[in-house]
Length: 586
Image (cartoon, rainbow, N blue to C red; front, side, top):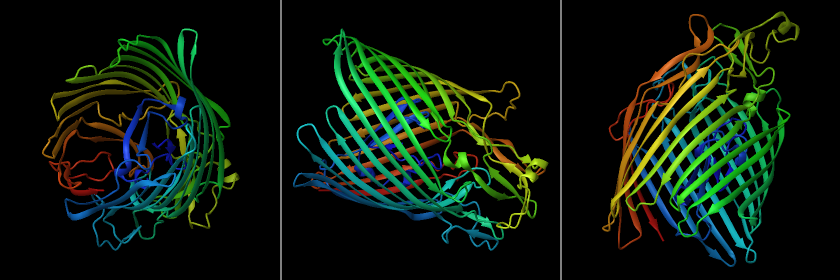
């Protein structure tokens, strides 16, 4: 997950919180998606793809203000959003400054209000999200080929999220900020940024007398990158060369880890060359070979991890192409997965499970083969077809409970815990899954333009998942975590009178999830099978642009049919939400 090339991935947790991003939707110019493993260029954690949100350059577009109010089942007029942004030029500097606020209720509560046996993370148990943010970016041209950029942002966010193990319904309050500086030129690009945050997190609700697992977290990431770029001719071939190096510093203070303060120093280097083997300027036909190679040093593993990737692209015309690619990627263990160490209560009075990563876990790995065809030559229809095979191994997961042994007691791990007032009865923690996951399938997408202002589109995706357990590996229950069939269809209409409309239909078939839960009978953590039924969704939007004023009105509905569903076995039940929006640009 990137914002203008800056990573906003939370290294300590191994995920991205979209709500802490400090830019408004109105600041976004476009979103680029790199599908498939991309560690060869973007490094660790670019496991199955990269989403790069590209904002409008300072000084571009118009200033404006927008507001929205929404409603959902059981919570009328409970969604609010507002945004204000200004862009322009002063002296030799261009600027873009924005601020925004958003709040939304939970979709559903796992426990009703008025419970006297429960404690809560915050008084308002219906709150699902509240965020406020500010962002400022500036650029200045230093001569013909040099552009300097500086800026930063800050957000303060409360949100619910789904955890793992015993901490399913979790809440957090996060203060997050960044400072970024860039220098771009014809051949040399420099980037440096600091991401820093302070958070308090714990269970959204818990039984009185049990711990809330509330903890303070502080983290900082410092990242610097340098890239050399050059286009040149070598014999009969044209080359587009990119060479880069980077350094990433990370620190964290978190009571759930085995040390009060931890630091890591990461390094990387990469090379990518796009070779034009053959081209025809008249027809746009050509043959391209793209080779990428990156190596990352991961201090926790104390080793360098290579990530190669190669693609061959044949273009019959400028807008008609075939592609074959082979890629590998990895996800490094997060701080939580590497250094976990904290006690969890058990159903047995006075007992606790020591959750800690013992031994060394390794990186998750994926190897991918993909072939695709894209046809954008017609004025009336675009077609895209992709097929793929992914081999995934060493997925990180919670281990089964391990009993205490005489050696555990000898090491002092079976003694009374003065801090919690309990005795340890077992161990758990993160480990690598010994199974190999095979995923293969494809997607066909068609977009047609039957007349001016009308787009009709649809896509079908097929995905098959299988698990292989060899040797002493014990297979879990069937685990798909995605649907075998997905269908998307819709239409967009744009009129000269100012009316715009869009409707989307989405269907996904049933899913099977293997989740680790406590077996009430055996009091053991074990994999259990959960199925999510297939369901359809219809989303719709209608908007109007006033011709005499730069005002836009919009009304959108998510899950228009109010088909209440869960998208995860323990997730909230999602229903219909309707939002009325208005914006004014000047």
